[in-house]
Image (cartoon, one colour):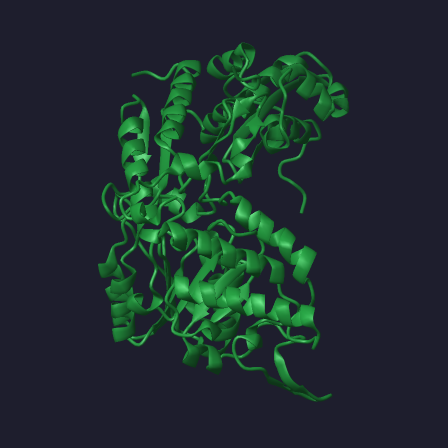
Length: 420
Length: 126
């Protein structure tokens, strides 16, 4: 284990697999698990699983309260995890990183807090057709309540955003917020976030970015992107379920009313009213998922040790391979852009076979993929399909996984008599 | 190979029995699984409380469509009371494949539609 060779060493996904206990198990009567659904949730390395156990075995206590050793240690571990997350996305100050349950909760926090305080009748919130339901429904709820309107940026045939439409919306002078995904969970499109931010800011609009599919897979720098809010989930980036992050620029967070009320988020409470704690506590009412946050910090360490550019490079090579191999199969239709602006998500259909049947047959071969509308029904309608099958890769996937996928798709073709 | 996609299931999917619509019909009902887009319509022609003719149409996954095809064969010539007494297990037994919880809705959509038709519903009550 000479560190001298660190720079030249190839990204070794096969060796990394050994660190993921679940990838060692067999499924469906003895078949090795081929996990190609990391866009839904990632698997966890032993170090992250161990961190959860260690916290409960050695450090468990409530935070910010006790004056005893355990509580101090738990508080310190929680704050250190926040600092790690902040460094990963280059947030200027860890206090701008609020721990939440997941991306969905982060977006709802902004919609309910910032939205209720800043949206009024006639104001416009711009979304895109690439959005996951979690970046649509919270805005429908608050827009209805506040009398605001929603607009959607359309896509071209390859699944790229039509930014000129954003300009049209912005020209109305009524756009208060643009909320768009960084990476489409259904198509893998990487959107031009910096450009969206530049245009939106020039028109005086605030920008939230759904980073659920980007932070696990790409280098993300919230300052370079210029975003106002950035939301992501721990469970898609090797961390536990139940912990996520909302990054928000300090001026915005400080001006916003609380989202949830309760313990830990107050400075003083009288029978009539309360005053709020400083950031980040103001937005973290109640006992948080301390162990999950700490384990997320360990996941961040793991990602940074490999380096995000190296992970990105590995996934790009895999996706290039997957697209080429799938394209060889007669009857396969691929969705999403072909080029550098694509993540490790491959959406496809095969003849007229329903994607659930594709996934069902793949499952019997030990291969886990997602089939369905990917919580993006408006996008599926726009593409003119009921559903697609989706294979998504991560740092532990290899070309052999793609080969197994292709072999199984050939079985599907045979079973369903797909014409060449 | 896949237990779920045994030959008789694929056969019913590729060559569905009693496929189409009946005009005129005495009963008709249609429903879908919003999550996966499976859709099944069943038309009935009745004669003294028995199913003189039945047809189904729809689209969706092989499990949902094969299940509808098999169901039409199960109930053709049977009484409406027979249909009302049919259980999910009766249909699942007839399918003869291991249905996971995730695919149950696909397999049972046709039964849900047939029951509604048997009870003379035009749409689901609020």
